[in-house]
Image 1: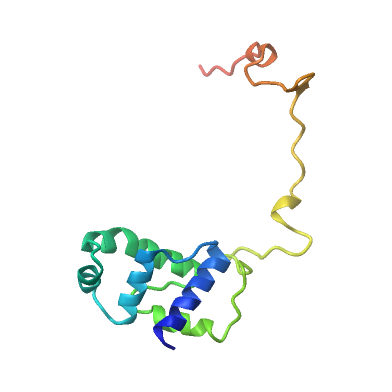
Image 2: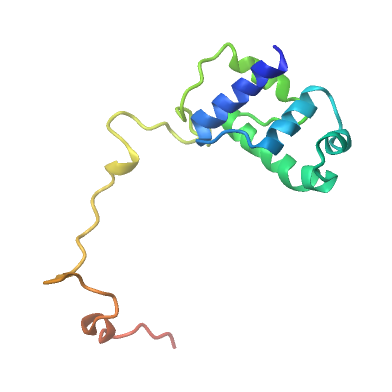
Length: 143
């Protein structure tokens, strides 16, 4: 696998599972890491500050990539995780991020919860929360 394939896979899993693509700085981190560069070397070549890469973007990027891949990855072990993706079809959020959570069945969906009760209406629409009937209600007072 070369870097372009790794970049394509990283973008595909982030898109499918988190709904986003790599940013420019994340691509820079991935490229530098692919070529075994230190954050200092990546910073020198890219113009980003080393603290921005090591304390801000880098940790967030590895966390997001870990979420998308479904396993913990870091600057030193991401290659093998990306290579594993070539033998697996990329599924759009089919696997829960929480391994203990059960996947939704066809009959279940986030919208399968019972409907909320209707809001009180007036002739003009929804009754505002600060209407007299709400404002006059006794307030919960704690002793």
